[in-house]
Amino acid sequence: MKAVLLSAATGLLLFILCTACLRYSRPHNRVRMLGGLFLALLPLLALAHIATPPDLGFLSRDSLVSIPDLDLIFAIALYATGFFGGILQLYNLADRGLSLRMLIDILEKPSGRMSADEIMTSYGSGKGIIWMYDKRVRDMLSSGLVRETDGNLALTRRGIVLARVYSALRAATNTQSVNAP
View 1 (cartoon, rainbow, N blue to C red):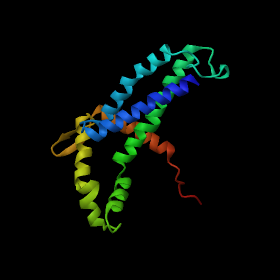
View 2: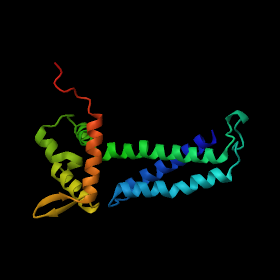
View 3: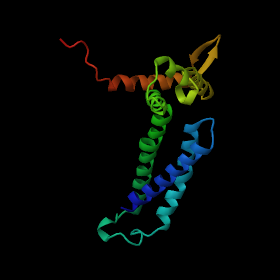
View 4: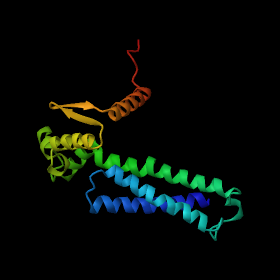
């Protein structure tokens, strides 16, 4: 139980810090910044686990783990799961979800309606679909996934590896039936 409580508290602190950083700064690479915050709080979680008593001063004997090192490993695993499976995914959904951003743009319109042309030009609080596309290309260039040659994008080694991994994951999770009789 100590692992659950400490990882939840550290995860909540991480969520607050991530939200504040994304709200009040414009980092060049948001995912790298979020990962940095995750790593920065990891020692805090370990120190809190080591420095506090097994019962945290209020837990019952039934909720204690007999192997403290195992409890610390479990706390770190829970913290990592909360970040990679929760906070980071929430960020990706809210910031990079094309369809979600379109829904938000329509919601923010006083009439609650938009034509396809309006969505193209006002996507992302008025920045437009072209801005979004350019931003994604700049992100891939700056992270070394692609390089530009003669006006074309070409995958780097890193880009090839990432594309193959995600292509395989996509193929493995594809649930469409193939021309069922």
